[in-house]
Length: 513
Ligand code: KIV
Ligand code: ZN
View 1 (spheres, rainbow, N blue to C red):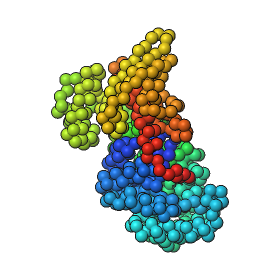
View 2: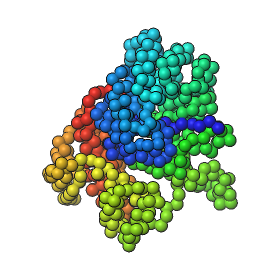
View 3: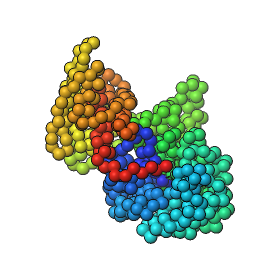
């Protein structure tokens, strides 16, 4: 059985989704969960892109022990050197160098001839190989590249020391028949095909990225790249959870194995969905809310008689299990800690004390504290702690049909206290105007979404906002609270803090594509 390596680029290509930007603490939380999920390689970022990216890659590299941590680099020496610097503390490191090889990219974007592109691949892959034991080379836009030139580019990279060749369908153009044939063509024309790892990286513009990735695997790819929930640039990337479960359920056909811990799927998906602010559609394969719901009477009857009549995947396989009994205000510290451990959270003493305090506060206002509430509690704890700004006080004055007012107090990381007041046509507008004044931000709210975490009138509110700065960059924020106005304020402060952080850490504008 061939072992398929899973390469996750949620923190790099996934973060190229408009409106998605994780702060450092969120990236660390995601990387930890990806490691628990059994991902082989975590693409932690693009170190040259900004100081923020550099520090996140460095921090993740120092913390991840079993997975390989990867940094992206253009075919530019200082990109590769910066990736090396960021990854120097990693237990296992690799670099991912890319250069476009399609005529359209070479002519219009790179303004380079074919011989110049081959020379650049040779030079930069060799340079990377002096620093890293594992060097992945990607001929960007491979599926629109002249196949004979693609072979020349790949051969040049292998001769220069590349150990992994990744074939990207950068614009989501190919289909499974063509992509499978491209891998066969490479296998037939690259004499050392079996000595390096061939990898697949697909985008979902035509809705075929998972099928394309599987076609590549059928034809010799031994690494699959993608993101959790398929988030990413434009229509997104290959959804890794779909590939993992397809390979497992159809093992009779694919005959492969992987290190993915399938019962971590739901938890991983929920985390990415919350932190990215991208809800999972109910009908999404594997992890959508309806994936295990049987509506028609005939189906229900069949499933009751024998689940396999209509269920090819059991919910338990991917960690969608019935909630255990909820906790409540009479639950003690012991029960709380035991449940958090069951849910897979390992906390320091300080984190546990803080989480228990938050749990007690929640249990005072909410009768049943469910597993969903507990996941949200930890997420709220992490995102609030991660920001340099913490909402300390919110006061709203509401008048029917009048002008609304808000007073907001924020505590900052350096110990200062910021307080101000403003008005607005509605309560939320008044709160957001006040936060803009306090943060001295000129940002615009472009999206606001609110959902209840559980059923019931005492449910916690989860608010997601997207804000846009003057340069057009967008930032996502999340806020969780049992009060909707507080959740709304927290989410806006979270997004606003990200906009401030980005302004302070961006060193170089690097267009990835
Ligand atoms: O889609 C793409 O081509 C990429 C490269 C950087 C591999 O993301
Ligand atoms: Zn991509």
